[in-house]
Length: 293
Image (cartoon, rainbow, N blue to C red; front, side, top):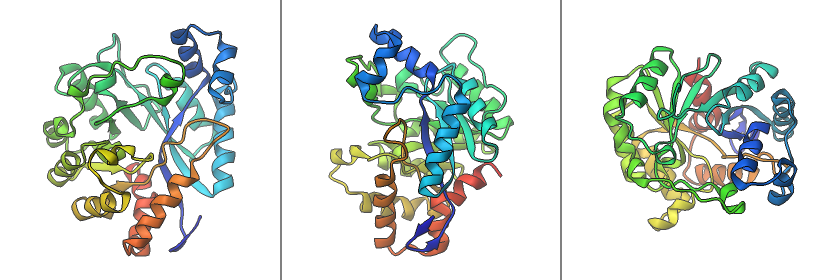
């Protein structure tokens, strides 16, 4: 993709894969017919075959010049969809899946590159032995462990009038400290700069060289601290360096597709901060690719 530093291969570390299963789950919770969900949200209904949605995402990324992306299966139990998507477009996608350690028979499916933990959503502490068992397995398999910390809002639930009874007691990035030290071979990813826990996320990253921060979303949590994106990036670069920041957009649904506005706002900030081409290359894609090399 053309950037202020010339042509660079861009990879997105945070794209939600809203499969047919995701829509079916929403319809059930909202007590709607499946056909009602798309029109109610103003979203396109995905094809039944996840490979079809994968090809749609591949075409969308081609349109914007994005080389690859992490696709996140965004409900527990939907691993097969995102694995099928990665298989449909070899070398294009990294398969991530939400796993709930508190659920019966929680496991890590073959074919995943990362597991995604949402402690506040599912109501468990990271020191729970069930969570640690999954992290230990992911570490032994050289997988990444994506852990959502901080404020958690799910816009689609608000649109459908669904409650989001998430528990912020389980949202502190420092809860990862012991685990990141205990499993140094694991790579931990904290999205959205800690989503309101920037200070704690930076402390964690400073103490644990296997912790990465993803830059995705509008980062609306900044209003809690009176911060702007330039300040957030400056502080993150000062502590974690360019080698542990992962560019992401938090893109999710069609017809919006890939959220180029997020990319442009982040690139503008990095340019204003005077980043060199080698640092920009790391943040905008190379770090994600090296995570799984």
